Image 1 (cartoon, rainbow, N blue to C red):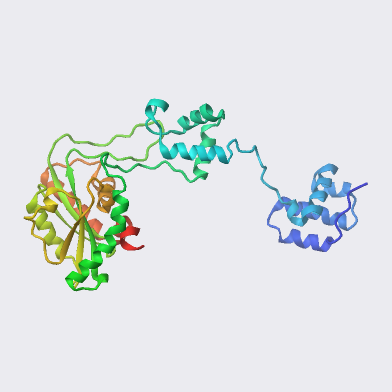
Image 2: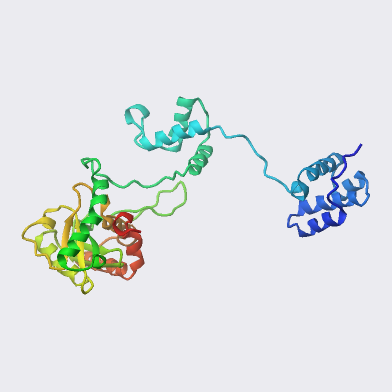
Length: 352
């Protein structure tokens, strides 16, 4: 006996659902079911749908179970994942801890190394594309690592983040201004020379793109400072890093501070930053960063952006040419205050 259709539908209701459907195969199946409601035989419904009697029977069973939605094509479930939650936890732990060169034979994990680790530790053979999809689903991406000083003290960065913003309020009280009038500035220097950097570039797989590189040694320094909250900066291009250059840079920063405001300038502990002979304008208070913690300074990220996009993959013909390109790059940056905000803002320092 043929399987009976559910009684809460009729031919007009099924045809109305077919009219609303945006899926062609679902519409065809619904029209075949509507014909059965009108009294057509299963053989006639199969001819209308261009299928066999068995398939018409399957349509009826799915329609009885889920209504019109049961006749929509669904994605095949495929093979179950070879990794369970325990495997994923172990994989995340080994990625976070990093490889041990003496044991694993590599200094960074590649997909193929993790595939071998899964086989060695859990006896699971998994393909590179499959493991790559698993890692992406877990939130992992292949990112460039930022440098960290080998002698950095444990907890130095976290401690500085906790104590620095509260320290700016006493500075405001000492200067007799509202704490909201404090401008947080960051300062650093970058050496730009003829021995230039070669960056990554798009090229066809299997090729090795080339870029010009000079071996001459002329160079100069950009003294740069930014106020990310206001999207402004101040810089000088100087022939060397010394006390005189830093004094001139502080004077340049003072010209960019808003009237009635006071700047807290965060710098690393280079000798020319902390010298007692440094002439500091009254509108600036210098605050040193913890030693060996360059990742606290967003100007380091600014140098990386400028090198990658404006100052690399080129040959400088002379010292004057280097100075000209440095000035052009910095002026281009200050013309884009949103760029300074995007690169320089920090949650712990600005409350964003």
